[in-house]
Amino acid sequence: MKGWRRRTREGKSGRRNFISSHAHEHSREADEHLLGGAFTLIIAFMTIEIVVAITAHSLVLLADAGHMLTDAGAIALSIWALRLALRPATTQWTFGLKRAEILSAAINGVTLVVVGVLITVEAIQRLIRPPHVGGLPIVVVAAVGVVMNLFATLLISKANRSNLNIAGAFSHLLTDLWAFIGTFGAGLVILFTKFDRADAIASIFVAALMLKTAWSLLRDSGRILFEAAPAGIDLAEVRNHLLAEEHVRDVHDLHAWVVTSDLRALSAHIVLDDACFLDGHAPQILDVLQRCLADHFDLEHSTFQLEAPNHFDHESEMH
Image (tube, rainbow, N blue to C red):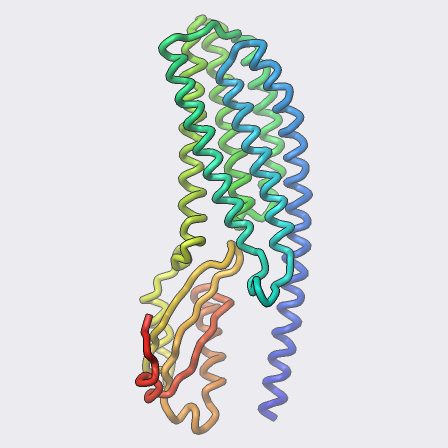
């Protein structure tokens, strides 16, 4: 009877995992279509902006175009990462290639830093020796850019932004939207006051937005790549929850990490009373502990090694 119950529970779990996997795959495909639409918009507008920037001698338009190039690259990288993440696990890649999404977010952060620094250097030079800049082309292109970027940003906002990869692409676009607003303001200043340095000042504003976004992406992706505990998870609190369960005598080798944005994992050694192993009660304790973590900490992927009290002396290294 107990065996039948266990098989039934495993069968239900398997069906839930299949449904969840199918839902994730469908969601990722929908996200890919949304990213593709935004990518097409950006490439088309970026081409026009580069031509106008060269004609008007505007650094801020070139800065915006450079940022849009990183936007396009970020979205293309995000699409590629989404496809890699759908590949099944193998004996070599036991979690599949899900962390491609995190690498994509990190690369997006690095590109923002590089472009932001280059723009800042050029803007400082233009503050010292400002060239003549055409105000009207800047105003027109920036106004169209705001509308285009709003549409592209709305497209990606419908995707799953809890995914750090997609959040990176969204951050690129949102930063670019603010950049176009700044560019529009600079164009108005130049048009009505002939203050050419407004172009360089707006460029520094764009670069600052890039660096701020880059820091956020690099910080979050870095935490995952270096396997820090998930944000918002206090391991001391987790340990206390586990110890509060009946028959649990000790918890050690407790580790928590993030595999990718939608998969958080935890492992631990759990010391139980000897009686749990003698009367076959240990599996029920395991169910309780895993349910506890899922309910209180949203940790669905937990692995426990159940141990008797005397097993402690056989462990050569503790973490």
